[in-house]
Length: 297
Image (cartoon, rainbow, N blue to C red; front, side):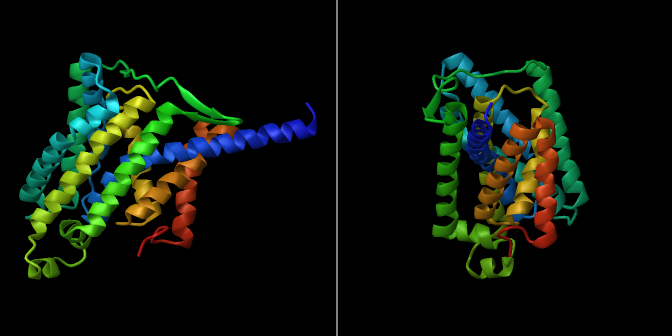
């Protein structure tokens, strides 16, 4: 093959790798936004967040297989259920650990226990076989010349960005949203404004778990799932949260996009096994030169 043809092909591969990385980053943003709220804003190390994502995937699978409901629409339908689940989990966490000043180690063990229990229950109920959903767009793609947009990635990315935008509007334009952003900084000021910090944190944590319903629906659209697949995302979501800057949702989105692009380019040219190492190398470099993260204070 002529040198010019090889260079052109490499350029096409690079451009499509960047597109795939952006689409993957949109999914990573949906998975990480809940961690950004609980860990970045509330200082709650919810290591079980990927387990709630997997629950969302299996609920989307059940609604899709039993009733033919679109998996992403299924995620929207169960949002209120996940919200109240999150509120209940936070109440147990607060009563058992946070109120007693044992949130650090005991709280971490609590969420690790949830992660383990969820995985075992899903194995007992569904087994270890991979489950998948069906929708008209999953096997389709949009092609514009050399650019390829697989709809199984594009649709979750677009819906994720819409969810992200709505969440940012809520947090920045409403009283309760601004209270959530302030709760980790000055609880006394919140009390002076007649806001109960515990109720604010309960609402914030409930929102963080509600986002897992959508992330779970996106996940099972993108790939088949089995009960232990959530463990693959534990490192990634905390890395994105730290990379973007603790407590910054905009930074979370930027960090997710960067990680997605780096992973996609690495997987395209060097193989999938190198992608996690290069991605976490990016995290270490960022922290070396900017310890607070991209948009951290």
